[in-house]
Length: 456
Image (tube, rainbow, N blue to C red):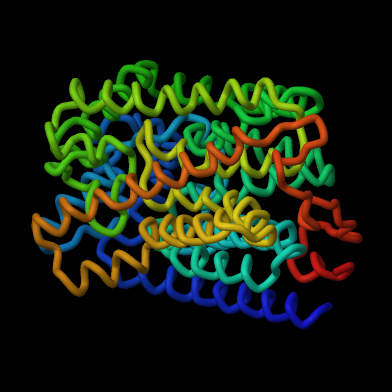
């Protein structure tokens, strides 16, 4: 292993240790710790005991009955109640969480967090396996900042860490043409749990055509198979769950709701803020009848350009990374996403490294925009900011603006680079193919992080 790759590996390991320790500490000391996991865990247990998890009163009652902690502070208690009682998870999520719900809470927490950390860190190392071939220290530095800024994945126990990890692993499997069956399964599970996170990557594979389209359809079919027993199970206990789920989503996303993007949001601000572009539009008028059409028109045009370009392009690994970089940023903006969903920016690291190794003015724009995207969606970044300025109404409202704005610029930047690509040779016009594009035989890799670099 070269000195540069060894330095990069050590930096990634350092970031991984910090991510795990800081994430667990934040979850332990925060009154809202593991709130998202509680919703999934007790939602699945509710179904097992023949209670409707989509009825807020029944879910909160079960939580209290089984010894769930409610803080003494009235404001904090209300926030915890909103997190735990209002179930907005799909039936497939509850089905896949059922094995954990059979276990005692502490055991389920340990296994769930281990699963999230393993998937997310493996995905991070696989992105370095791709990008590190061209600039190991540079790509490791970006990944270090991203990993070290992702504590909410563990402190909340949100399934986004698992879904994003599985989705990025799928990208590696499909583009490297290794462990393709595992990639199909990973993408199917991601689609079943959080389609708004895994869906954009699935759409790329569908539009890219060829064998990638076949794999996308296989993943969709497997996700559909997983949904059948989930829907049957939930329907047998809660026959009106579709209407109840829609009502919960409407309540949580309406002005003043838990997941609302506007300044009146009850839970969409602060460290785990909502990063959809509606968060900016709502500053002018906090009304979904205003900010949703504005965002849909703007993002719809950009996503249409991306879709047409993807559909018409000749596939190459190089153009694939630019396409995935663009959609990983733009997909955060039109619909509900929080900062932890932006860990999908892992897919921008190979594209940024390609531009960095080529030189020229684009390398600096790529580096600066990637750094900005990582920092403004970073958990530790906002923890430091709000600790410094305080959680005032002004700071909370202003804090919702940088993340969607930077993601929009980052997405447009990579979209412009992607539009320039797609020549039959797979090269970008006027630029040379770099070493990062060459397939590397990873040796006997069975998803083991420490063996990725044996052939380096």
